Length: 269
Length: 335
Image (tube, rainbow over all chains, first blue to last red):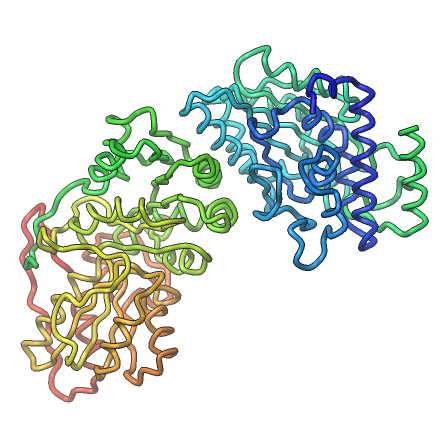
């Protein structure tokens, strides 16, 4: 898989679309699930795995395990996971659990209890520092989980240690179980918070592959950890999904699936 | 075995950890703003590159420990027992125990050995850690065992909770005593005794003193030292308890979920008929105070073990009282 080639914007957009299609197929098996998370994060997974992180060398930490569907999808697209496995998503006995676990393939660490991933990523970054390894650590976070205090313990510590190898990407989709994050508590101003904690911040449209790729590339431009705040929408700007739907846990009937797949196939054409 | 009052030593854990880490480059030492108190000032001063102070952020510390362990390190996490169990239980379960990582959680100031009151007294740490799958729970009784336990748990695969007394550590055992993580050990009396006393950690000196007073009053005892509370060596304990009239478990911990509970489970499942008496904190929070005051007030003294045995055997004779042991500064004796 040629990393540079995949950085070509059109292929990254296609990869994001293929992630959404894979996720839609997976959620359709049971008719409900974490489809919104995949719609929201498709470009983030596409850009991260489509050339940003060196697969098998850099570390990838998925803090909100509810997003693991996006990881399965991108892994299947890139040949890191047998696509046939996706048919068993969420099935009894399958390693492809709906919320990531120790059985999850591809990632170095997947958490399910929210707010824990950044600390684990710091552990990886410290280990790389101790070993003198040129290894970046990418931690995927969601905005909702930043309500957990541990995220800020970790943010403070990572900046204190000036962990240059560490990149946190935050899927800021303003969605959590009880509704909009803004309706539950106030996390904003996100960028100012991370800056105040001592991080470099790159704020970007999380559905724009070019801006995302540039944001990740900026990790080499300075010292200390980098937070990429990816502004996204839980429904991934899909016109086929009614805006009133609960994006955190989508009920996917056959008609909605057909409409989604038609829109995605049109995007691929 | 030595007699009370026991000589004490300082920092047997901290010195052993430095010694081991010099030979084992994969060992990393984490702390949470209690460096001197957890004897890891020695590590900080000797092996600064592998000492990481996380600050007062136990949840973050356990998560970082998990990441380091996934990358191949053996991670020793150090703070007070109350903070590294209650404050970060979910992080221990998910970031350390579930993935069965080589993280050794070292919790100082067990039970009522802290003068700091309920906020600093780890009275339920053993219960919490016993409940976590994959976790091993270890509590050495003296400096000889503490010196050996560091290498032993480093070699023991997976997560370990190590419960350690802080400060002056008594020397109870002779130098040739060998800590065995696989077995509880009979250290006094014989298997034909009337009363089987099972003790761990700071309650071992009290158990030995109680056994002596009981022997002077025609009650035979056997004392089992249990440095590994989970997995419990049920084979040794039930084999001896089966020949006893009474079992007394003694722990510096709430009677709910700790050594006494573990022994109760083992006895019940083995069908041992001897009744059990649990000496420990009676399902209550305590208060600030000296070890002597708190151990006496909350039932962790030598005479509490004697009383448990005496009442458990329903003896009609007047209950004896253990002779007070004069303690010079720097020495240690049970309450």
